[in-house]
Length: 144
Image (cartoon, rainbow, N blue to C red; front, side):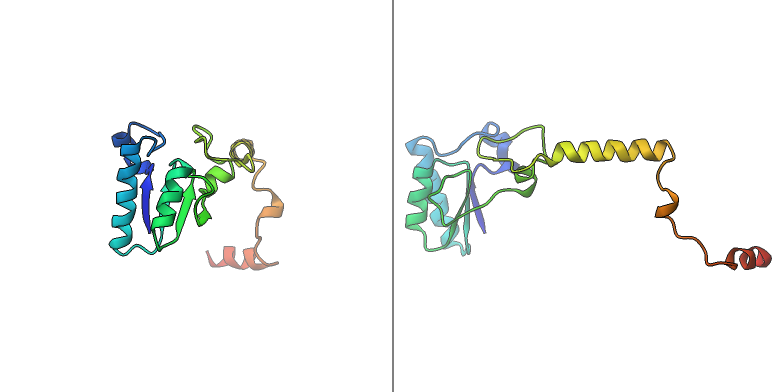
């Protein structure tokens, strides 16, 4: 599966987390890249953070499915990273992300409560432990 547009591993070269293909020259490069990726044998293409007009041109020129992540509705399908969709990562949220939950906050609160319970020796409680069978501790002590 190919991937063009904003590729997070290349943000340093792209000047940060910025939309790609917003000029005619940049869009043409993306279209050429998409065609080359298909010709190289990709079974699908992910287009990320690209204007929908460019996504439509790419989709219309390729025979393989084109998926969008922040590249508009003009694709064959949509994709979103689970941690973005669930609101897990809170330091930065791209414009194209819609958080359907705020699990990051809930996770932070849950971890803090866990640490507090462990430090306060309230966890694990008796209900969270397995005990030896009746009489087995005495047998073990005799053996030791």
